[in-house]
Image 1 (cartoon, one colour):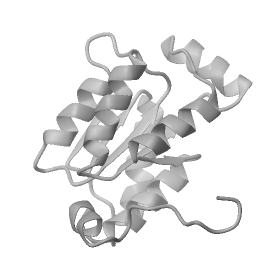
Image 2 (cartoon, helix red, strand yellow; image 1 turned 180 degrees about the vertical axis):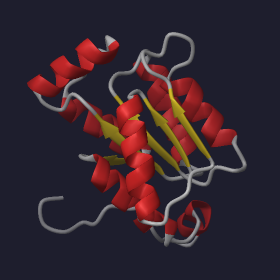
Image 3 (cartoon, rainbow, N blue to C red; image 1 turned 90 degrees about the horizontal axis):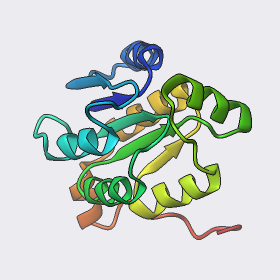
Length: 159
């Protein structure tokens, strides 16, 4: 399991919170304001990394939306990707912008793009840790997809 994050503080929090739940990471990268490498670079790397069976991310903003969505779709086809996006409210967007100069997109647009790419949205760091625990107990992503399990949304009320 790998984790990419734009916040050093949130990186430490998730590693500790997930560790307390039994989760261990193969790689953890805090990339700050993405001056050299960005979320798409890291996501692509983790998608190809044999030691990474799922990817977690804390993202404040993205540099190239089309590239990110394309990369997210490619990686999500072979590995679970769970993302916590900051800036879901006006106050959160202001914090994200001041912290890393990231432009926070509309939360509804973000949720739709992530869902279309086949990744999983979460709303808090603790929910991110819980989702990693849940996914760690499920069959491998490729196996679940090949046998009809684990990759669809329910068709119940409201869907």
